[in-house]
Structures are given as C-alpha cells and as structure tokens.
Length: 118
Image 1 (cartoon, rainbow, N blue to C red):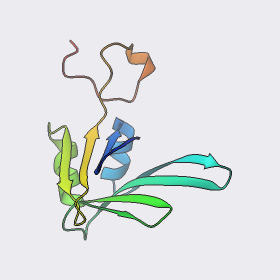
Image 2: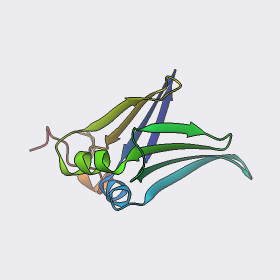
Image 3: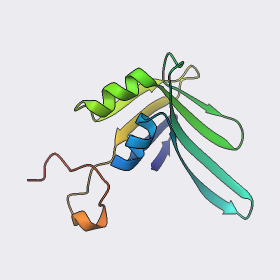
Image 4: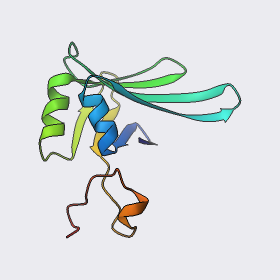
C-alpha cells in the first residue's frame, strides 16, 4: 500500500492482493520506521458497521475505515477510487494502484492492469 499525504489530504493506493484482503473483511497495514521503536503505522480496513469512510489518528497510527458495502461496490466495479471528506475536513482518497506505463509488468506484478495498456 502506498501512502501520500499532502496538505490536508490523504491518499492510499492498493494492489490487487491488498484490495482482496480488505474486501474479505480484513485490513491492510504498513509502516515507516523513523528510528528503532518509533514508527508511523497506516492501515485501511472495511467495516460492516461503518456508515461513512473515516480517518482517525491516535498519535501512532492512521486508520482509514470504509463501509463494507462501499468497499464491495468499489472492488467489483470499474470505479478507480473512493473519495470522502472526514468529519475534521481531511480529504480522503483510496485508489486501485495501476501498473506504471514506463515500467515492465514484472516490476509491479500485483498492480492492477493500466487501462491504457493494450
């Protein structure tokens, strides 16, 4: 999972395998370790009880939650991403990660096929 934070926006891009894990009721988690024992964790999860997409930060981890129904629609459809604004005003975007046009498929085997590739 790729994480991008810019200004008051947060974007997560997921490979096919990561999307499948979240769709199946799990979560995808990653981290960046700044110093030993000091990491920023970021994770995406689906929830059958969530009513809207939300993001929370507890001082250690960024947690983005998507309603299960919205996740299922996204995974099964042609929609590239899910957008929302958190209750604190953070712009959220969760997207399928497409293969780069300038790299070989072998370099990104789990990325979604790029729509412009033939």
